[in-house]
Image 1 (tube, rainbow, N blue to C red):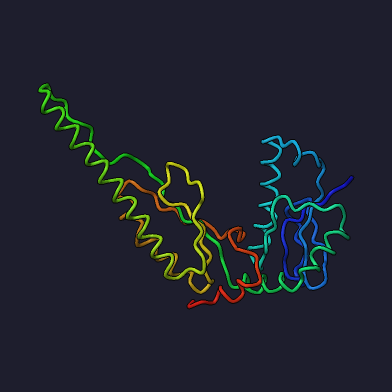
Image 2: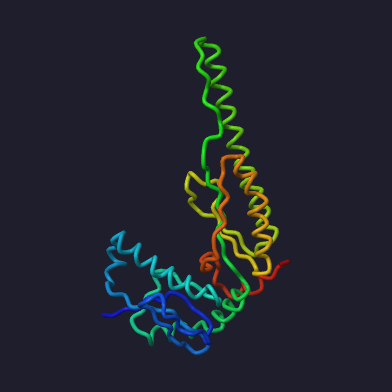
Length: 239
């Protein structure tokens, strides 16, 4: 059976893009559905990592292409349907909610903000021949590492505090890599883009001095957005 992956939703007036290849913009009343055929349905039942990674990249490339100039509501990678009729029926069932979410996302941008640990800033323990001096040097080195780790965590808290001051939503990664003291997705209104850029400029040098690399990337498809009608009201609180 031929299956369709539903990648995301866009406003109905959206025009189909030529790239990425292999996708289709399916009209669903006032909403457009971004779909593409699944050649190997068993990919989701018995996933091969390389094959699944290629499909995830394809999914992301479609959403990324459209979110550059219009609101996009991403769907989960497992949103698979048996036919175009099934896609249309499912999308139109929640048409009002989808339109509300697209209206919210019209003025939103998503970025990732990460603090990477680049190097150990502590000095190596000096070479000593006296046992007591050696233990003292080791303690000094250990204290320096602990102080540095504490300062790095404080920098992460400072960045989060700054982000919270102008972001609609800040979502931290559930399982950040050990080499990152901060890994989060932020949703901001487009009018707050200058504040995000200023944060990156202001905190770049202090982060570098602590052996950290502050990386702000995007805009990305709004994967962190919670697709519920209630967010249409929540998204305007105080911003």
